[in-house]
Length: 213
Length: 213
Image 1 (cartoon, helix red, strand yellow):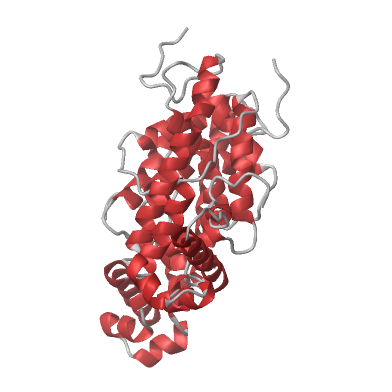
Image 2: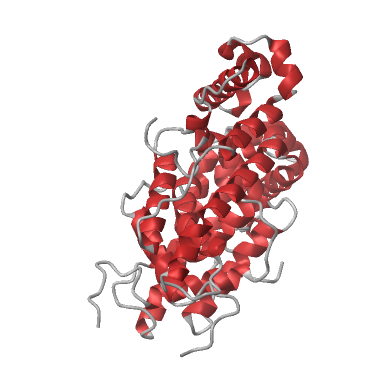
């Protein structure tokens, strides 16, 4: 995958990293196997034994290092947090939010993706739920410069809350594609980005709300 | 429950309706049992036999009428669509969206609620997924007057898309509380409503976008 990793469909790239050392190589093989099996068969059929077999790694190694399926899912998401992902920088708030939204859209709009499989797993496993919200917290924190740069350019008031802007921009995509299971509308990434930008410009995310004029 | 049913935590009220006839009474008992068991034990432990036992209804009756767990979940959601729910009418777009958001917030922010249990089930059962998105489509359609009244009052341009406004207002609540598992911030319903209102006023949901000036 040469394109930048998506804001959410993350581990796909990271698990391909082959950093030095036997431990790192094993981790990479095991996490790649977790992702593949999750997409192919879903959480219900994900077992440590199946992962060990797919990764071609001794099952005792997997049990010792990851303990159980929850540990594997948590590490898959952790591995995505230590990658080099950064937010787009297009020169405008609407452009940046549209690019972010396009990554989310691509991660959610395809056939069963790793992202949807992980979200489904998060409703079954507390470990997966914790790891997934940790991952998103990390991504929203890394994306904060999109908003602080917009403030510096005068596109939004100084007290604008970056996370509120980012969540407002991305949330309609998760809601439409994941929960409402609506047909994927290719205009949605830009429309949701534009709405969040418009609200940010008008000070809707500034706290306390700026005085008029 | 004397308060109006929530925008999403819906079946709780409906299954309490005791409309005439033995068939209606049985349906009411069975759907109440489905909701209770789903909240108590989750989808994994929901079986037709457990539902029949809890409802005190012959299991063959349940199998004949609902076939399986998917059929039970679908009917639970269908029953919520034929209730008398209507959107709030506070006199302003921000007021209406805040009231709608407060219903969603209450449905999602508590201990495991029927809403969260149903959403979790929708990741396991195609029938539940279809029924849940049908339910939401119905609720968003019924809520459209919130936006058309705002247009009539001059609060938003004529071509404003009701669903886009409604999804923009509610989506951050589902995203924060359900997916990101953030601490429930009581200011969120109003903040998300205000952002959607601000964007609607500025024409962000008008299609095609109005010319400037």
